Amino acid sequence: MSTLRRGDEGPLVTKLQEKLGVDPIGKFGPKTEAALLAWQLSNGLQADGIAGPFTLAKLGIEDLPKAAPIEIPESGFKLNKLKGHIPDGVIAQIPDTSARFGITNNLRLAHFLSQCGHESGGFKGLVGIFKKYFSPTLAVAYERQPDKIANRVYASRMGNGDENSGDGYKFRGRGYIQLTGKENYTRFDTTVPENIIADPDLVATKYPLASAAFFFNSNKLWAICDRGATPEVVTAVTKRVNGGTIGLADRNKHFNEYYNLLK
Image 1 (cartoon, one colour):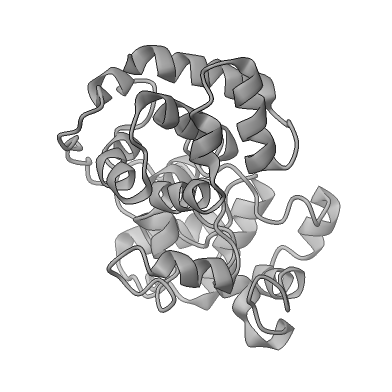
Image 2: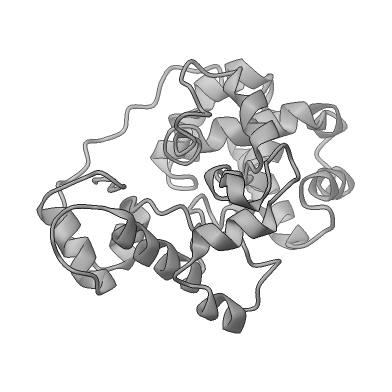
């Protein structure tokens, strides 16, 4: 399936614009991006302004080119056992991500995947980036100004400049565990070959899993994961990831599922 973003042109962009209720001119510009961000926010999706396969499917845009089968790279993990439980596109990212960020055993991988899956709504990016700051009613009032919302919410913290700098929106939450803030983007930039600062959308499109592993590695979560496969350890990992125990039952369920599959 295709992925549409600002600067793209063609009949699929026209179809997207028709669904969003903007002028169907066939060119993805600022108005289309703002309308898409508003739609994603109001529908509880990750508001990144990019129309990926999941967003397009939710919009009912079905006549897209059929995606080629995703090849799963060779790995020391039994990744084929995860097929049907985790999207193939996520499984394909595991070997490179594991090598970069110290996922060296089944225990770490199961803890990691269970947290990522829950935080992203089943690896679908279903975490709205402003939910903790805006009620649904207030979000509607701001729905055409997502850039202004982010610039205000994230101003002058996490390495961002002030509200007028635009850093809040540029370095908004992306990836399966919402990499947020210029400081974190800058640190993550040192781990991948591309220039993440120049193209932060890569965190959402190419490195959603790697950015989450970067979070685990930076926050010394592997040492907690290594403590074992008990509910107490899942709770400890959850507290470090979430700041509390929201969704703990779901995280425990998926940890046990993935750990048993990987054995």
